[in-house]
Image 1 (cartoon, rainbow, N blue to C red):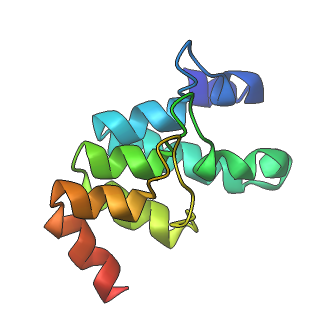
Image 2: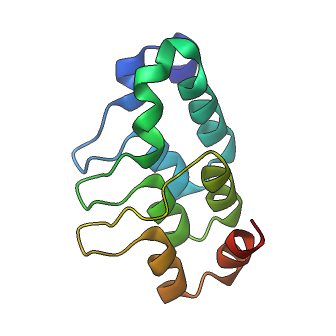
Length: 115
């Protein structure tokens, strides 16, 4: 419903933790929702929302940080292919890549090494 309505404020609205629908999709591993949101943000009428792929929540985590944290290699790969910034640090000064290394997310790290 959210995507079908296409209301940008709903597509980008953060919750009390600063998580947007894109953060939630990355956390839960909800591939169809994540892909649909990113595709929507690529549309010309949503160009001002293209930064959502690197949006930080209250902890400074981007959707890429969360995909690493919750071990979703397919989402890590998709976000990186779509231009997610690997250099963004969260509030603890940790990049998504460093988080993945620290958590031993070898599947996700292998994807990045092959890219």
